[in-house]
Amino acid sequence: MQKKRILLKIGSNTLTKETDHISRGKIEDIGRQIAKLKDSYEFIIVSSGAIAAAKQFVKLEHNGQEITVKQALASIGQPHLMRIFQENFRELGLFTSQCLLSYSDFEREVSKENICNTINVLVANNFIPIINENDTVATDEIKFGDNDKLAALTAALMKVDLLIIATNTDGIYTKESFINKKPETIKLVSNLDDLQKEVSSSKSSHGTGGMESKIEAANIARQANVETWIVNGLQDNFIIDALENKTAFTTIK
Image (cartoon, rainbow, N blue to C red; front, side, top):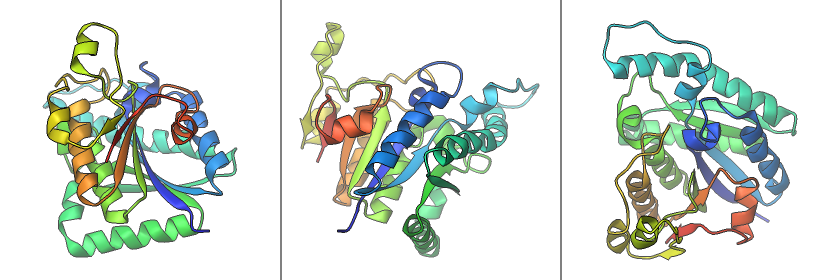
């Protein structure tokens, strides 16, 4: 039986559990679920968190623009982030690899072919590719998309079966319920124009995205016939619970 392929996008708020530090417990939670699901599913991960990882260790002196400092922090934090993934996943019998990409890689046919071939070889040999934006050379992700767009482009390129975007809410809420402070999840979306009217443009505390960037990502995935789930990554067991329909989340078809 051919395994279904899931691309899991994890934002900084999920990885830090909305604190100022990367949560080893959350990374272990993700690894434990992947280990349980590995007979039926194969995973590709797009992970933010390099800047958050660096902030645990350093405070940079600088006279430059904020974006340059964030790029430097990403450079410091990326090896730490990968080490935490590697250590926690290895204890669960899972192997990891690092792929650093930029949006320009998706604009060249040769680059896209290389990405596909490399990821396919890694997955076929039971290595989980952990993808992040190459922040030292690209500024778009740090300023705008928080890896949502990168995840969607990768999901479309790799023709995955499902894109799961882990965030800090139970999917997308109706605007009225959010205003009334009684959040109600929109469970199924087939019209993105209607959905756009329900969404706030506010950003999350650590991430630079927000729901608008997630909808844009879902639209990219949708054009490649990839379904998107927006789930609450702060919950333990969030992947398995979503797959078993035991939790509220938004499906965008």
